[in-house]
Image 1 (cartoon, helix red, strand yellow):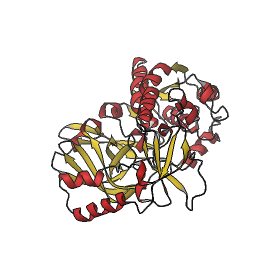
Image 2 (cartoon, rainbow, N blue to C red; image 1 turned 180 degrees about the horizontal axis):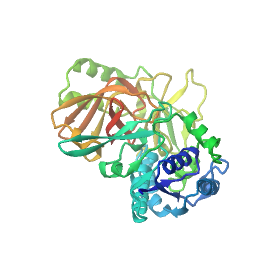
Image 3 (cartoon, rainbow, N blue to C red; image 1 turned 180 degrees about the vertical axis):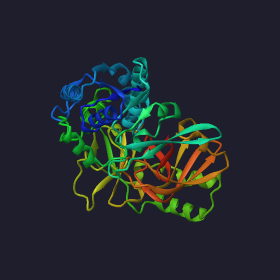
Image 4 (tube, rainbow, N blue to C red; image 1 turned 45 degrees about the horizontal axis):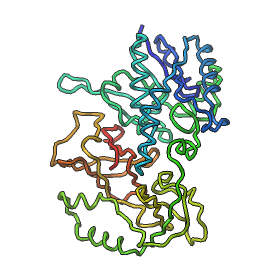
Length: 399
């Protein structure tokens, strides 16, 4: 009998995951991960870890499977939290959920499971795993979840073949309402439990308070850049001159981040720290009196300046992005293409964003992704992922 360790989070998805595996004849063990100890920055009404742990225990008892809690808070702090602080300090916006899957669930947690004699680890992610044989070798595929409203393949975009080989996603072929129905039919306490939001296995976080643990508030200017600023006219002229050209110089222009100076606009007010804000953000600016809604179009953590624009502002959109070589990751290494080559994929730059057509260009210095249409809110530090149909092929950290 194959042994599988399930990451029981205290939610309905992992609960049904454990039930389905038991029904399929696996020997199932439930493990709850405790990743955080500081409750001062957690909204206690939103999935406190104690309640989640108790729910996971009750589910395990209902299913008749062994259960234990493991403390991964030290590893979580070192691999996720410290990384988050460093990225925000640098004016980038990290995605801790992607990192949590790569560094915690399918690394530290996976190793713990293997030490328990497990053949696999399983999670309640809405994605699917398949495999293809090529040249006598098995290649594991990360496939989008059948429920398009819940597809979580993006969050697993940094997994490698070794990790996928040990992973099971038992609910990936189901719709969310069906998962809740199964939980209710089996009398699982989590059947109608609200989905958790917030950091992976931590709870809903008060992000400003969380960041202020290490990134202290610091007053700076909020500057509005008008839509007709010369920088946008100059950039459009460069774009027009490029046309359909996609040589190295053109790719750099298409993917570059515009750099603003204070003299391009006017000061609208003050903020408490540029590292608390990200591109496309609207909430938290606390500036009124503008004709249209105000959005962050850029941050400069060195000068502690936030640049903003009103409405559908040209500063919110980019035609392309760049991923350095050491940040490029292929879920399917056998599909990696050579320097000087290009290939069309469907891409997304954030969870739940609809897939959009793009062309990937492999150059000496890294990978350029040029979109068919300009994308809103391309943010350094986030992950771009590319798909071939339903299969996630690779990903990388946006530069």
